[in-house]
Image (cartoon, rainbow, N blue to C red; front, side):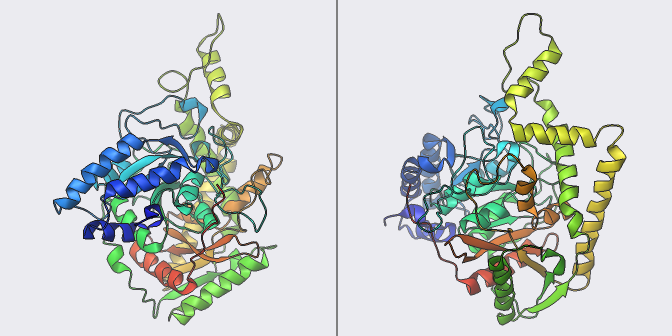
Length: 495
């Protein structure tokens, strides 16, 4: 078989079980694709030795008949996950040279299941960004192009390297993290599937923290079935993470029947934004029609506090970031600035952070420190927390009224060119999260499914939001939508 790197997780797993292919062959095919794709800047720390060693071990496990679903499947790991002995920088200069002596729970669970780590993937610095332009490694580049235009496009952020790598078939799947849309927005931009599970479903232990009450890990895959397979391995209770839920993890793949007859799908009127492109509007109504044709009931719903979600998010997330990033001081690990004669500890902190953090991270730390300061705590942070409670209640009311899932656009536009959203107005960039942040604020599961192309040939995604802990049902609805949409477009290879 040629082009083994183009397989999805389910196809590769079945081929491995039949003996049609070995994990070493799959891994070598991906490693070759990675080496030819430096123009995408998706993989920033390559680990071919670890990959081949794990692939050989996986082949032995499969031969012995002791192989979970993920065994032998080559994947990429976002640079936010600590990986033992392998650089884990969160795409920041301040963590230069940091090689942890431990493994994050999620990457350990994947390794224990026999998954093969190909390397670490590019991302926005400390996961702060929507376009993968804040990385110390430079921009990750989308494998997609607009028509015959050579302009480089963003793969979205912060999990831009993961999105680019999966879409370009450099790996079979990848891990991502989602604090305000960082799995779902990049997945929509590059035509792949990405799911953010319920807050607490996947352990956060060993993942470099951005905003602890919002961060959640999830899989980025080529289709919904693959998302179900990988998510099951990534989930589970972890005593090392106090927010991790002690709940049984169902067999998500077994729940993919595609039957949505009688399910109620809500369409929130507040998501009809002013100036929304006609293509996004049409995609949304087409998606609703597809689910209706599959037997679901489409109902109009109201989530009245939606308009406050972005402002609340951009108070809460930076506040938590300023608290989490205080640990980077040049004392214990990572980079330390060069000090002049007579410099004390305060100068060391100041110089290290000024050198180590990029402009976007500095901006968010400053905002966060400001909203947590004595005079402004109640005016900003406490008020944002109250708004968050109201947003969560909006969703609770809708689900209590019998709605099974909510359908919205995933992004307000298709992918844009790198450098098009300039530094001049960071708020323009923040608006990219308009459809996704509510899900993080409410701790709900959300999935982005590719559903069509815009007139320039770029992918557009739809988002489904589910009840808490109901990832199985949500994935099944996503599976029905994916089947109806029949999205099979791939980027033309230019790299």
